[in-house]
Amino acid sequence: MKFITFNKQKISKLSLGTVQFGLDYGIANSEGKPTQSHVDEIVNYIYKNGINCFDTAQAYGNAEEVLGKSLVDKSDVVIVSKLKSELFEDNLEKNILKTLDNLQQKTIFGLLLHDSQLLYRWSQKHSSLVQQLVEDKKIDYFGVSIYSNRDFELAINNDNIQIIQIPFNLFDQRAVTQRWLERAKEANKLIFIRSIFLQGLFFMKREALKGNLIKAKPYLERLKELEQKLNLSTAELAMAYVESVAKESILLFGCESLAQAKENILHYEQLPLLKKESLDEIKELFSTIPEEITNPTLWRVP
Image 1 (cartoon, rainbow, N blue to C red):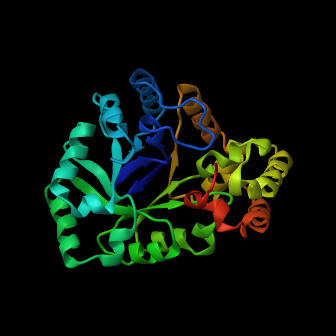
Image 2: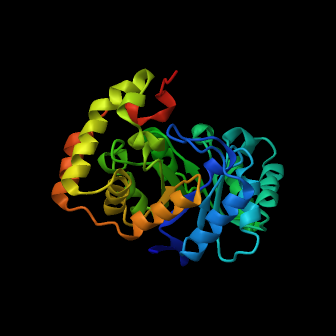
């Protein structure tokens, strides 16, 4: 497993996203929520294979509790959880204690705002709350999960924020075109990358597309042609692209089964770094895809 070092903390390049542990999540999800015993198998396997980083949230159903039970006998884990802005402002002490209790941890590496709403009304009061969490050793770092370039601008210029979670994939290239990765590195802020498979859209069969996602068909056909040209599977190409561009960022991946976990780790360990001509071709093919396809909040699927 590859690792990066952030302020002397060794973190695996892959982080297990746990939304599937608490919710039926993903447009291509056919297996549903795994049981606690299946989650234990997944977490044990990836931990033994060098992955020490885990991403969760209070909004992911009971994912925090399920993950906490799986991590109870594991040391040196890097856990990031998320709170919605309204929960940050509404009794933060109660909510962070709930997260720590769910995870069976005294402290966690990162607490993120699950949405960017609070950034638009940030004040010294909010800065003081974050500083207190750090002083009390409940968290090491604070951050935010962003959705737009305006969100990013507020995050990069907020001294309290050290972690920024961003969407980045073959179809959504704003991290490159709007220089999010470069600017985060310059500011010594850690980037977590979510949605590398665009919530499973890359794996959808063309005939299964519905609603406004029917418009994704030509782009998915281009993707399939590129996979064949480069002799890579969908998962391999999606991961190789992000890994080739975002060498100092953490990549989130999710799974509903042990088989999926094994497959994703195997793909990652064998990934080729894409050559410049391939990266240029990807930019030409996919950099102008409409937001109603690249942004899952705009999907309208009956």
